[in-house]
Length: 143
Image 1 (spheres, one colour):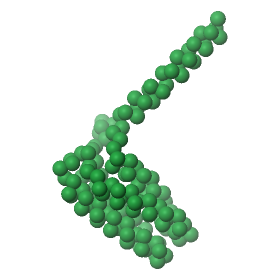
Image 2: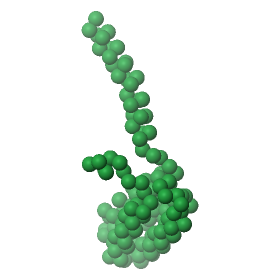
Image 3: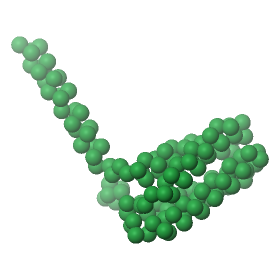
Image 4: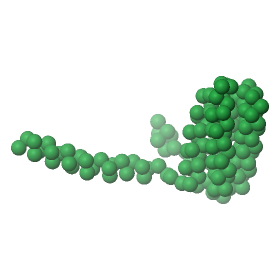
């Protein structure tokens, strides 16, 4: 009898868990622009950790290519928050891409000091763009 009760409890739990996870996923606003930004963000975080290491320049160039492709695709989108500011957003993305191009050139030249400075500049540009165009996170606001 105890085994049947346990088995029934496990089956019920297995049925409920996927719906709970699906509900968690719906809290996050997923957009095409957000997907591009997520891919860019992952590559950028890894790049920041390794930019000073000249032995990883080949991998860094691959990450820069990802950032460049995703930022070019993201520049074609409109921000969901303040879509009326799309021209300003696209101008900022154009400036961001120009910095990415400079970073790529510095890495190809083997100038990791300049590349590190450009990564820092990209970080500032990212923060400015997020301040201007990313909807504030309600969870962070409450904390």
